[in-house]
Amino acid sequence: MKLRIKKKLIFPLLILMIMPVLILGIFTYWNYNKTLINYEILRINNELNNILVLLSTVDKNNNDKAFILDYIKSLKKENMFIIEKNKFLYNTLKDKSINEQKILKSIKYDQEISSQYLLQYGVYHQWNWKIGFLIDKEAIPYKNHEINKVILLLIPLFIFFSLEAIILITDNISKPIGILLEAYNDMISGNFKKKINIKRKDELGLLGHAFNEMRNEIASKTNKFIEMKNFNEDILRSISTGIITTNINGKVIKYNQAAVNIIEKTTQNNPIIIKVLLSQIMNTLKTQKSINQVKSFKSKEEGRNIYLDITTSLMKNTNQENIGVICSFNDISSRKRIEEKIDQINRLTSLGQLTAALSHEIRNPLSGMKMSCQVLKKRLSSHLNLSDKKLFDATIYEIDRLDELITDLLSFAKPNLPKFQVVNVYEVLENALQFSSKIISQKNINVLKEFEENCLLAYFDKNQLAQIFLNIIANAIWAMDNEGTLKIKAKKFIEEKEYILIIFEDNGCGISKENIHKIFDPFYTTNKTGTGLGLSVVHKLITANHGEIEVESQINIGTKIKLYIPLYRRDKNEKKSVNN
View (cartoon, rainbow, N blue to C red):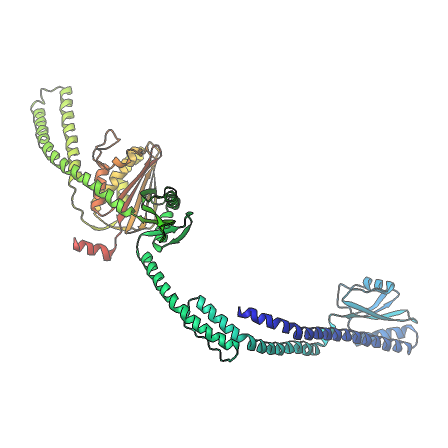
């Protein structure tokens, strides 16, 4: 605003004082250059007259022509020419664009060669010589550049001093008003401490005193409003619940930082979350009722579900009139995952206890049955035909298979406590693949490995990690037809904790959505020859080693198993080991 006042004063003065100076300076410069050109023409004409006078003083014979021509050449004049009967005897033209034909044409038709050059020539009729010069109008000012410099320097100097005088005059007029405007801007920005000091006894001085009184009154009331506003903002900023408020039309008018953090984190994996929040807000406006819902969203990147606890309520003013909607929401994904794990662990624990008791009760009779069969086979070996021997062998084989099943049941029911150690994940994984290489080759399965680093260290029981890998690889091989593909990826994964993420992805038969939640249950299997304990054991072992497991699957497309294995951190893992 201060600049506008100055402009209103400065511009008219600039026009009145500087414009005449500029016009006079430009006219002087133009007139001076024109004078220089006229002087150059006069000088050239004098030189031509001198040459013509010289020619008239000599005898008219061929020897005299050669003498005069040599003499003129010795003068070394620039842009000079001599023509005899349309033939150039002498030519020192610098500009190659001006050729001899242009000069002859200009002389014949008495016209200008170009806007840059002037042609001046004289005729010596006795020899029929045309002697002339080309004058470069653009080069003339450069020959007198010192004088031009003085003229060009005086003009801006005069303008500069005129401008300084104008600024001093306008400052004296606009400075008090500028002080008031600056104080006004400070008040708008919240600075009430600056006091106006206009040492004048006129109306502007009285206005400054009144302005100070008004400033003190506004500062007192503003401070009270700021304290109340800061208190409310501190509450909104400190809570971890996301808060969004809208007007009566559903347009967002306010939100806290927690809302920004939750939305930024969750919408990266599922952009539809924002639409769901806005939809619930509009439903509250429509029904005029509070709504509380827990919404589940599929994460694009990690395959995990995102859970939001969303509550929307009508917002009312002091007159109990609806002025909008307040929406509060929390990301309860971690809590939901913990609840699901606890529920699954409880179910598996109950099954494990029952399985352990039954396994012991079944194993003892089986041992007696196997021993009895072996004794009978040995005693009756001389009396048995081939069919009877096969019957004994089949019985013993089935008893061994039941015993193996009981061993698996006991491993599931009460696995050994993990012995935590630093494990090279790639080494264990390569050993598991090597152990399974025979069946991989038989089914002609293509194994693709994609490892982010050369070495990833985990804090895990090495034997149990090997068992986990073997069980998962075996399941993947069984699920695929011949010439299937098994992709194995490994990389660091840092979220709430630091993990090594290992992904096993096959293109096998897949598992339906209805059955995906059953895969960790004991005895659940789609393999007619399997026991249904492979993934149950994997789940128990991964949980015992503080890891996590997730499964995604689609029928006839394939299955993806994600293992989150604790990353080795010397400062954390060894401290935890000591505490355990």
